Image (cartoon, rainbow, N blue to C red; front, side):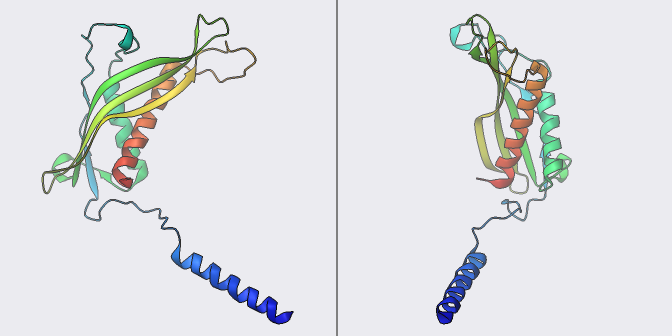
Length: 191
């Protein structure tokens, strides 16, 4: 019996040691190449077409002034918070991130019990992105229609529910925060 327990302990120890040594490859470090330490975030350009004629398919497209400035500021702050790439002046940067705001949407998701009033909206912010290596003047990656979003309730109109009501400004800030987080993840993690 004692031999059987010793054998079991040895096998369990070997298995545990094998799992610990091989691991699953998880790391808290950045997946970007070691040669990139700094980044310049170019001010986002507003390419929202406000002259486009309204029709059913785009009736939830709207224009929000200075949204591109808010996006730029949040993205810079996210890089500062992340710490893998240091935001710096363009002439000293290893990488340059360029972005264009192409669409801002406020889509209804849920209607009140009576079906007349909107109870929940989703804010969607779409941007085109490109990341450039400044030493080689080479495009590293490009993403079109990159999205950040946030859903929020404007009333407790859904019967029997206790939802948290949020203002549109708070929802927009949360959508920008989501977009900035995704941009930094796309740059740093390269998944």
